[in-house]
Length: 85
Image (cartoon, rainbow, N blue to C red; front, side, top):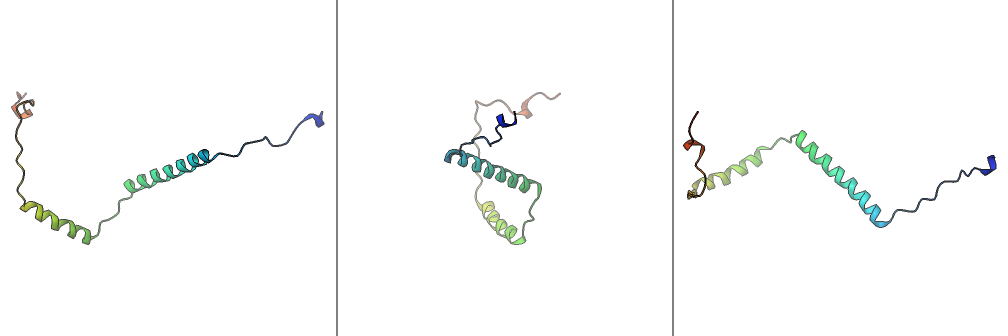
């Protein structure tokens, strides 16, 4: 009876190129998702140099004329015009 049992490992075909590509692509996607989640959880403090550079263009934007919006008559009336309860 002991001679009837076959303990040899099963034959498993080698993974194809597309299977390898899919496997490593999934690993890279998982790593990317972990990095994104960590970027949300752990905030990085901004330096003062970056804030100074961003404040300069803002002052230039203030000098520009603001665009006036043309009210359209087809839209519903605003909440202010509705009856207050």
